[in-house]
Structure formats: C-alpha cells, structure tokens
Image (cartoon, rainbow, N blue to C red; front, side):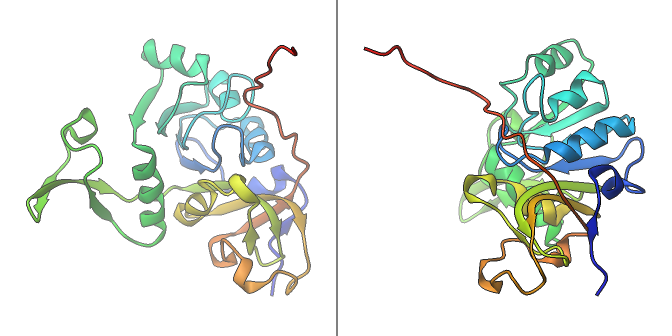
Length: 233
C-alpha cells in the first residue's frame, strides 16, 4: 500500500489547486480548522475560489486570510458574524454569499459525499432560504429541495491519522470535518499525529481512509476565537 503522507502542506496541495475551484473546509469558528493548509492555499496564489465552510474564520486567521488576499469569490456558509472583512466585502458587492441553515449545510456535504444528489427538508420553508427552490408536500407538510454538495477539494483537520488516511478527530474539533472530507473530489487532511498502520482501533475511526487522498502532519497554533474574562472580586 502506498503511503498518503506528504512532507509539508505545500507538497500536500501540489497538483490539486487551480483558479476557480470549489474548496470545502472543515472547522467551526477556529476550532478544528485546517489552518496550515489554508496558509498553503493562500500562498499558492489561486483565485476565484468558492469556499464552502460553516464560517469564514476571523479577520486575521483561517479563511479570513483568504478574504484579505481577495482569493475567495463566493462563500457557501452558515454563520459569518465574526469577520468584519467578510461583512465589508459582502455589503460592497465584492463577495457572493449563499446562506445555508447550519444543519442543512452539514447534510448537503454529507449527501454529496454519499452520492445523494438532493434531499427534502422542512428547514427554511417559508423563508428566503427556500426562494427559487423546488418544494414538495409529504404527509401534509411542505419540504424544500436542497442539493448535495460536491467540492473540487476538501481540506480537513484531524487529531490522528495512519498512512492510509484513516482519521480520528478530537472532541468538538470533529464538527464539520467528517462531512467535509466526504464531499471532496480530493481530500487533504492535516493532522497532529501520524501513527503506524494498524495502531488505530477500527471502531474508533471517524473518517475511513477511502475518503482521504493525502495526509500531512502539522503543528497547530490553537488560537482562541473569543476570550471572555471577568473582574476578580
């Protein structure tokens, strides 16, 4: 079996990036984001990206870096409230935005990875989310059709991997990462630790290596998105 391990984020992205592709990115806020792969994507200089992610990081980290460098053309997101540059670009018409309810976005990626072209959900019925979309009644209730998402490239962050690309995520850092890994035509995972093949308990693997094409070990900065303190009394 050929190892999927690469020596650096730049090497792991080689041959997978080009202008105008769609990139699905794992994470929730700054938790579980593939930060080093995002940096490598920024440094690649590609433009016209459609970024599919729950949010766009913050102004100075995560996908916020790609907004600063004007490499993202469109965001497919659920929550965007932590990024002032995102707001500025959207309000000025520089950035396209496709809003999704959070659960719908997760299911769209999972469905795309499972080969499901579309599904019906009650979420968003009667709101702008359903504008222009097909609706259908089931048992007297109205549902809206949502399309599954297939991205050109998926970038995820995991805790452990083996050389075959089997992944284990750590606690809440799992968030959107398993669905993101599934929906990409190619998937690159940055991980904190690479263990020998067979070292991972098969029952504890969150994403099977069949979904993962490349793995790179990185050192995470683990930045804090919001720090709240109280005055000592």
